[in-house]
Image 1 (spheres, one colour):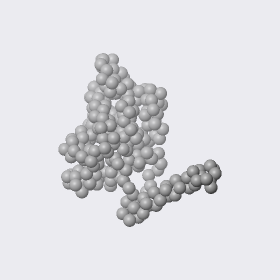
Image 2 (cartoon, rainbow, N blue to C red; image 1 turned 45 degrees about the vertical axis):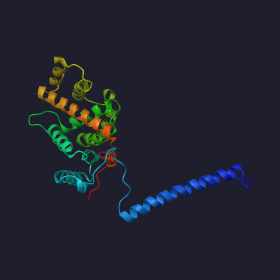
Image 3 (spheres, rainbow, N blue to C red; image 1 turned 30 degrees about the vertical axis):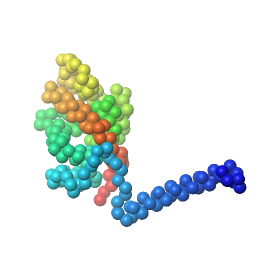
Image 4 (spheres, rainbow, N blue to C red; image 1 turned 90 degrees about the horizontal axis):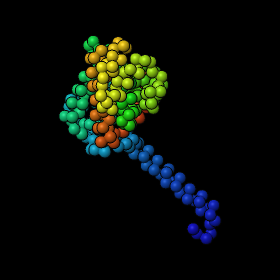
Length: 234
């Protein structure tokens, strides 16, 4: 410290220096945004993410449709486009289990509730954030997703929802199922085919959770507010 400065003055100079550096950093980023028209991209995966123009045409269409429908491309599509064949299989299986099955009794909200509970157990940030948003939308409930993510056993669930998650969590934990588990579902209007649906959702998202871990997948910021605030009209 120079002798002409006392301690307080020196600390203030350091603070001013740090402030200036931060302002320069902000200015640099703003300039980059102004020049390119785009802000700096956050790294969404620990693996290389191909540019949208480099992925196969059918997957480009998939991403374009997602953006047109939701206003953004879910990072899971971009991250998994590192392996195009696997992304195709991922999307096909997702559609098969998450769409309404003819004769099925699970709603889209039921399935998203399962995803949130399973992802919470597996501590998967991406799937908790993304599917909590979808659960809020399909359930039209702004609070329940957060409760299920924190601890489904203390969440404000009805008896039918509790029965679904009790079954789902036994499958998640690879615990042996008994006939009583199936009977509990039956008491709430759910048959063995619905039990298969629950198991399929658990199995698929257990895989999805682990792919998110493998890639250090980052959820889109848009997911955080979906279902919490009214969607802006175009």
